[in-house]
Image 1 (cartoon, rainbow, N blue to C red):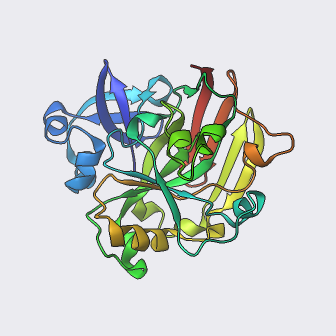
Image 2 (image 1 turned 30 degrees about the horizontal axis):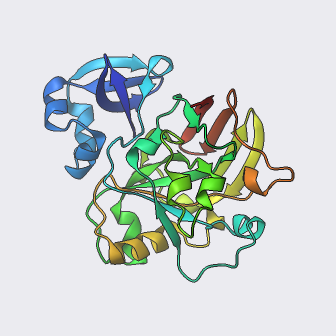
Length: 280
């Protein structure tokens, strides 16, 4: 099944994607579980098909929010695809390189991402996002996929000069509305092995990044094992697993996102995350 978060009559709601429509549950159900994160936490996604609907919203008319608008954590993995390590001149790390994004640094499908006025070095990074489905602490890799609610697409927009201000990535990764997350969550039962998926990033229709998820240095089970060792992951938490080679920063000359551009991240079996770029 597919689930997404949208704005309906100016209010945040969520629903199940069927064909070309989003089916929004009735008000009583939404009152009890007002966000997709809370529905995941209560293991209620499977109940939605049995609940009366309050609205049907055509996909072409939907105002998308990030798939999980209010995650407790968005943990991103840097330098995790082997080709990206090479283009960045990095040796394979012994442990995953992690940084965090704040929830308000991302927007939903179709919404504009913002190039900040303090920099022109605004870069794209297409990624696969993992949404945690239940509390996870000290999880072993062999069991890790049992803790996944589903998968989505992620665009980890990066302001490269601000990313280099220090040894931590935080400033360059958290500009307001610089990244995106969507268009929907595909539940884990439909993707039993995420390693078989392929990811592609397109800028104005031109393919800029393309790689199989199997090219990850630290695969999804390894990431969940590592992160759950120091953090108690909660339902709705997001792990963005890293970007392939082909980022704008590494190109000669560099390719930066600019106002008027259109960036797309596609993961087969999930869908396409599309965002225009505007100036701040």
